[in-house]
Each structure stands twice: as C-alpha cells, then as structure tokens.
Amino acid sequence: MPFSAAREVPGLIVKFGDYPLHHGGVGAIRSLGRLGVPMYAITEDRYTPAAASRYLERAFVWPTTGTEEPERLVEGLLRVGRRIGRPALLIPTDEEAAVLIAEHQGELTGRFLFPPVDPGLPRRLASKQGLHELCVEHGIPSPSAAFPQSYDDVVGFAEKTRFPVVAKNREAFERRKQPAVNGTTRIVSREGLLTLARDWGEHPGVILQEYLPREQAEDWIVHAYFDRNSTPLALFTGVKVRSWPPHAGMTANAYVVDNPELADLAARFIKQIGFTGIIDLDLRFDRRDGQYKLLDFNPRMGAQFRLFESESGVDVVRAMHLDLTGRTVPEGEQRAGHRYIVENIDLPALLAYRRSGYTTPHAPARASGTELAWFAGDDPLPFLTMLARFVRPGAKHLYQLWRTNHRGGSTRSGSRPRAGR
Image (cartoon, rainbow, N blue to C red; front, side, top):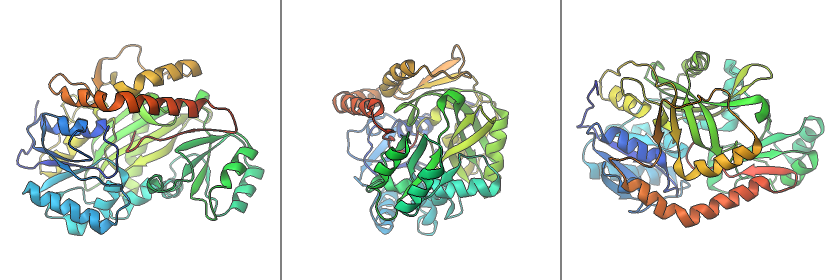
C-alpha cells in the first residue's frame, strides 16, 4: 500500500440504537485495522460481528436506543474516550451519531477527531424536508414534494396529485419513535392515501413525494470525503443493482461505474452548502427528463462504503483518517467494474428482482473484482457471527418484508433497514 496511516490515532465506531448486524461498521474496522490503526467500537453486546473482528482492540458495550437525551450520549462518548486514553477519530454509522457529533463539537473537541462541519448542517441534510429545501435553493434536481401540516392538507394534495406517490417520514429520527410510515411507502390511490393519513395524527410528520417509476429510472450512489474547504479528497460513483427491501432499502448488490456528470453534480452541491466529512448519497436517474434526482443524503459513512476504493488503496474512511491526522490523501482512479455483495440479503433481493423484471443497464456484464460485506479470509469471525445471529430471526424478518412488499391493497411499503444503505 503506497501510504501509511497515523497508527497513534485510533478509530472509534459510533453507533446509537439496536442494529447489531451492520456490515459498514465491520468494514471500517477492517479498513483502518489493516493499516495498523487501533480500532474500537460501541456495540450492543459482546457478540456482535463487529466485536468479533480480529482488527478490533476493544468493544465498548453500551446499549442505546438513539432517543436518549443528547447530554447523556455526549457524556457516554466522553467516558468511552477517557477509557481509550488518547484522541480517537469518530466514525458515525447512523444519522443520530453524525448529528450529535456535529451539534456538540465544543464538548467533544480535544478528546476526539472529526470533520469541523457547520453544526446545524447534518441534521438538515438528514431531514427529508431540509434536504428538499436545500436542493431547491441550490438548483439540485429532486423529486417534487409536499409537506402536509394537517389532514386537510393531505386531502387537498390527494385531489390534485397524480398517483402513485411515495410517503416517507419527514425527519430521519422519527424511525426511533412512532413513525408515521414504515420506511418508503408507495401509495397507488387517493383512497389508500387518505386511509393511511387518518393514522398520522394532527400534524403529519411525512413527506409526500413524486414517484419515479423504476421502469424509467436507475439507482445511483455517490460516496465521498470532503476536507474543511469542501474539496473532495476521495469521490466515487456507482450503480445500485439490488436493494432489500426491493427498490426501497439497503444496498444488496452494487457496482463501481464511472459517472463524471454525477461526480460533478455531487461536488458542486457540497461546495455550495459547505459540507465537510463523509457523504453517502442516493440518487435516481429519471430517463424521462434525463436528470439525476437526489433522494437521500446521509452525512456519514454508508454501510456499503467498501465498494469504493481507489487504485491507491483509499476509501472514504481512510481518506478521513489521513486528512484529519495531517497526512496527504493519495490520488487515484476508482476501480471501475468492482462489485459489492451483502451476502445475507442479496439472495432474497435477487429472487425479488427477477420476478419484477428490473434490470440495471449500467451494471457490467462481468465484475472486475468482488468485495463481500461480511466474509474476509483474514477476518472470518464477523461472517460466522452474522450467520449465527441472522439465520433464524433474519430469515423470519426477510419473510415478513417479502410479505409486506407483495400484499394487496392500496399501498406497498418496505421497512428501511437501520443505519444507511
């Protein structure tokens, strides 16, 4: 590898909530651990895949829900930092952690390293409404959207809109409480919308969004790391082949595909809003008007970030560690044609996509290489731990999601898996 990392600066995986089967955290532990960086992680218990990695120095068992008071979470982070005993790089794996770090930089500075982002920006980007408003403000294409404030607003929307439409929770954090909708929900009729809306309360916490038909669209992803000047030090583009739940959830299979237009769009938007740090973007290319429309902005590492690595061996986590420890991030082209597979969800996704007839034109006929989310020859225990925890409850969960996506009625919904795609 043509560069060395600052081995005296450890990394800490920060996650809030109960989602032990998170391959992104395992990927970050391996990525920096293979460079000799001491790695630590906050885990739900001692038997998560992350805790089983040979590259993990220590797991700090700290069960959380993500709904705790920020002061309690900050104090817990500081307590973990004191136990590590030296400044550590924070690597959040969910929006709650990313927002907490941004909004409490004053308390965390000195004990930890993290990008110096505008404190209010990650929360706004993680919000569906905040993101839509930023897109409108800066001329970035996004699906047309409405933000009803009452049931009457929903009725008015239903009278003039064209179905189907998509309903999502307006704020990212609503999934922790009592979400209005169960993930991304496709609504096919006026009656279906009004029926759902009766359960949304006096002030619906939803966004009603234009539906981009998958027959006329392609799902693209952008992962990047931007320095304090909002300059990209690592920027990658790829196409999502399959997700689980189908067409609405976590990436199950994806390829690296060069897309200069998309890279320029992402870099321009980040420069305009002044973001610093790691991003994970989901966009849908609408063949009807030839536009890439921004759907989701995750102001943190995405679960599938290990799809992307430059020819110099740099991924977004390594870029952040190098930059924040004062080292130069080597330049290098992305590995076009490389493939990423999440073993425990790609098979059911493959079966579902075959039934739907959906294909991704930009997916290469043959991969130039494959990165598995869970299995690694030099670190097999996370894969085995995943299997042990996934087989029975995981299979039941996949079946429930399949039933949800194939039941009749006016809606088709999918429960979005925790912590990024």
